[in-house]
Image (cartoon, rainbow, N blue to C red; front, side, top):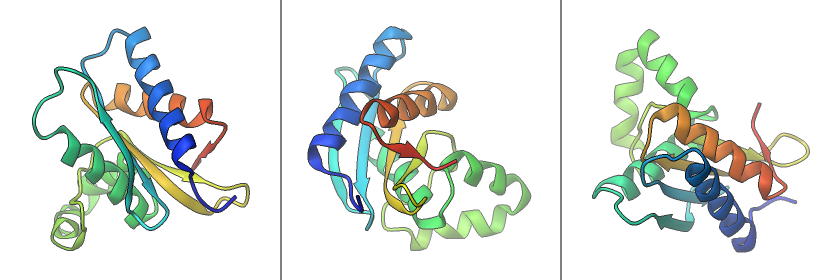
Length: 142
């Protein structure tokens, strides 16, 4: 498999929302991008705030563009703040250096897309992304 299908993207979103409900999280917004960084699917729960679509896309796009999770980009920002700050100007969807953006890989470990989630704490956003990816039968980048 070298791409995420719309059915898989919708399965990721449904499972991530279910995880959020189970954990009693704040309203989530979820973006699934294909391997080229294009938006494949997006949904937000009732009550999600205004900038959540852009934040979800920025987490996923930054992860895919840099090749590491948005959590690791956040860690990188502490060590190399000028470099990470410069990414926003060249990233098509922006950059949000906080957990919640996870790369989806194929069996060979090659990126086929990314998931970005926002709405609760960054740790909870990431947990929902990982749950959604697993429930869709896909793999998150290690």
